[in-house]
Structure formats: C-alpha cells, structure tokens
Image (tube, rainbow, N blue to C red; front, side, top):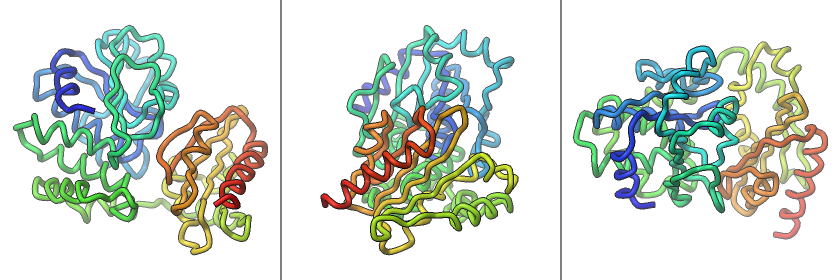
Length: 328
C-alpha cells in the first residue's frame, strides 16, 4: 500500500461515507474517527455510520465525534447521496452486516482500508491494504503523519484506541517497534493511556460479568487440554440480561491456561447462523481454518460467520484444529 495513492484517492473524491464491520471494535471505530477528522480538514463532506451500535466498551471514543448508528429511516437519503464509500478494518463487504445490501446496491465509488489477511479483497473499486500492519489505525496514522498539519487533540485518542485494541494493550506479537513509536507520538499529542485502558478493559457491566462467569463455567477443554471451546446460545444472553457486545475479549480468556494453544468462541446467532472467533498461542494458523469458511483475520486471531448450526460447526472446527495440533 502506497500512502501517496491513498492520499490522491481522498483528494479526488468527496461526499464520503465511512464505516466499518458490524459490532465495531476500537480499531475500526478509532480509524474511522481519525480519517473523518482528516477529510473534514480538507473541506470534504463526510458521514460516519456504524451498525448495530457503538458497543459498550467503545461508545466513549465515539461520543462527540459525530459517529452515527445506522437507522434506515434516517440514513436512506444519506447513502443514496454518497459519492464515495470507504470501509475501514474489513476487506470483505459481507462483514458490514445490515449495511451490506445497501453497500452492494450503492453507485458510490467503493474502497477499503484494512490490515487483515485476504487473498483478494472483492467488491471494491480501490483497495488500500497492508496485512503486515498491526492495525488499520496504523495505516491511517501513516497517512496523517505525512499529510495532516492540524490539531491532533481528537485524532490522537482515536488512533491510540485503535492500536491498543488490536495489540491487546501491546501484549500481542504484533506490537512492533513501529507501533510503540506511533503510541509514543500519540501520547505526546494528547492520547491518555490510563483512560484508554479503563474504557476498553475496565468498564464491564454486571450482566457482562455474569455472562462470562456462565460461559467460562461451561468451557470445554479438548485434545489434551490444548483446545478450549466456549459455546454461546441465545438463552445465555437472556438469562444474564446481557448482549452480543458483552462477548468482546472473551475468546482471549482461555489462553490464560498454559496448556491451551487454541481458543474457540462459537456463538449461535439464530436463523442457522454461527459466528466463530479463534485465537492461537503460536503454532496453529487459525486464519487458514477460518479462510476455509470464507472468514479471515490474522494468523493468530481470526473469525468467520457461517450459515450452519453451531453443533455442526463445532464438529468441523474441532476436527480442523485437532488436525493442525497433531500435525505440528
């Protein structure tokens, strides 16, 4: 990805829609906010729209930054009038959820800015991707560091949130020297590490705590305790009065157990759909597994949304992971 190509693309277009995958995380949301500020500094018209909500852990970064939650009766005209639609932190338009049909039918120029592994992003007129980057926020930062000359007061916290979210607060192997240099710059420009950490990791509701307790109690350890599986059913949300967003970061928890090499979170979405989220300690390439289900992500963190019942997916996933575990 050439920053000059992205910059020229932004200069050549106007009337932007910026969005990210459904159930936005800190990286998608933070990157949107920062890019939106930059486009407005160029005098461009831009709207930031997400679905189905900002999410409990990330709503703080969206407050005061003109991020809108998609409502059909409000945004139909907005999408019809858009000339350029940029999807951030997702190179597969199907990850847009409720916005996907609108995206498909839109006559706007379509582009993606993303860091996830994808052999060939489809459905876009322009692609600005770098799978070697640690976060989409890193790509937006590279652009702004070269081309932006205004205040970083609102941009720095947004990009810092993105990099913290996708490096697990600098715990993961993708916390490269460039990422730490980026973080240092953003802190100098106003990002606040304590506030960001508290917002992302210490803002759990009582229903979320109850949900985690229930699901971790039912966790299964398979294949000599090397594979952890957590299953989520609709009744789990109902009993604990929780919601889908409360699952954020849960898939990472089984990795605290030294023997666990792969953690799998399987969520029954209803209507025959199942969401899978996989995490790997090091040896197992979970991206290859999710890719076989038309999903994606990274070698050690990946996911997919599949039109199959959870029980059937469990069998497939367990078999695929066991094959890799025993092969290696």
